[in-house]
Length: 281
Image 1 (cartoon, rainbow, N blue to C red):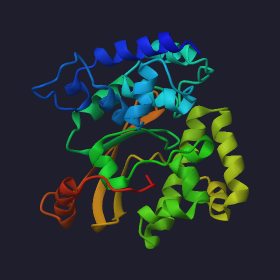
Image 2: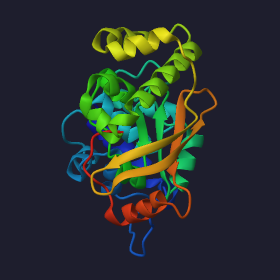
Image 3: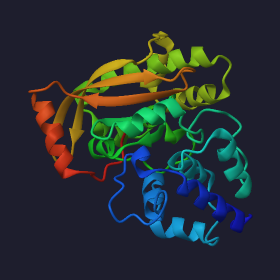
């Protein structure tokens, strides 16, 4: 691994990003042209010490998941993302989708501007690609897992803990929505091995999934009314809106509540409480 070149590349990419472009305050005493090291670490979900060691040309070889997180935090283009993987001597992700793909610029630009709205970008397989702080406070941060478990749909049918974010009486509705959405994605992708592998894994794991899949209901999830179970505020009723990227591989989700409702009051209170330690999306 070319540690000096990797360190230099990270620093130059960090220096070019204005704080306000990623939803961070510039502050009156900023002494660097772009982001601070600890800010990059925060955006990538890494410890400040770990990222600092990378920029100093030291530390352990970063994993592909870490490199993908850094590519998103530093707003790298596809060519820059590939270069980062080459410097770290990691295989460049073969596809332009999934959790290792860079967030599409149009969606990322919108996410950066939604500083007070709970919003995140997900893949079409419901992998969280980017998330702002208000969304993390509402939904919790996604767990640090690899493989199919990166998908919230996969965890929904294989890990009972994932369902804790919704009231039990709402589970059948969400199961139907997730499976009909996945059917639509499978049709859109065509002969795609990633979807086929997920379905092949889920069918024997979950009788509920198998029955819903065999029903062949098809519908992209564009809007939904949700009841989110928050550890401090209880059940929060809100609306989930979805904006698709041009190729359909990524989606910007944002959550809102009608003014004057209890949900709107709870969201205001959540702005004060801040991020909770949750593991579901």
